Length: 118
Length: 227
Image 1 (spheres, each protein chain N blue to C red):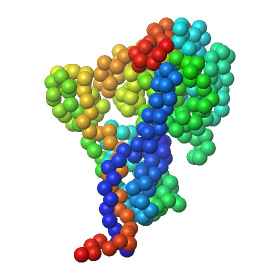
Image 2: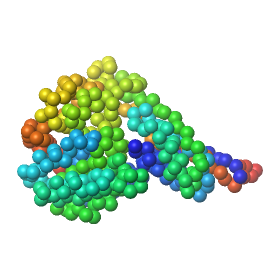
Image 3: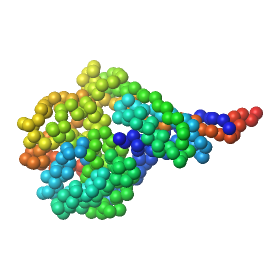
Image 4: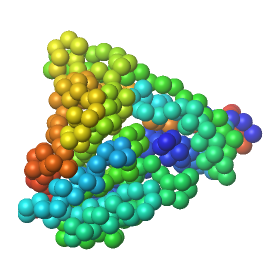
């Protein structure tokens, strides 16, 4: 449901970095722990991109696996199911190393500048 | 005309975070601690607030910011308690946002006399997914789950149950009527958010309400807001 807001935020971020150029591709990194539905995000992206520099741009995403580390025993592991206790020492002080990303990684823009003027 | 790749590497919700920080600065300046109260629709947030705030929290001047998609039903209920209440509606656009974000909260701040408050409770829009994604400048987050929703909810909505400092299990009075194993719920919750604090309540019978009131009363001191 909040994919509408998320898509708006992605478009805003892309437009900010486009510096007036037309955006053709937006690459996003989505953490596995974020409850975002990619299809829904893509649907809203097309909608909210209309009338902006991102209109017609393609949205691609990469899902970042969730990796955790237990603070006391330093064990690190990948997690798929929601199980945040350390499987080794049963500790509760666990930090998320990756999997919470919601990040615009890069954009592709049309530019009229020559690639190389050497 | 040709294409170039521009490296961005920016959190898409940076704009929200920036506004949340501005809210936070305003709250700190006014010495008010802020609690973000979240749950699914119908978990009993407003009824809990009525039970807690009816007698008031001793020595803690409390106000409420009511977030709803539409209408002022909840704010009207709380206004009967004679505490400062401001209604914030998220409708417009695609039938109303499913959560409060930092900017919506910011837009409501002029209607609140922050200087006259020690504690501001922001009742979020009822939703088990979206509010967890958007910080609003709060000091603490409470997640309310009612026994009628089922014991498996922490496993199904882990983000919400992780994005909080306190889980309130409400509607204990319904336990005899629903298939809800409190121990199992606590076990699932512990899987998702090990060692998170839990208070079990019934807004109807009053069970656990004093404990919740005491927890809320302690927020300003714990967060360093001047009381």
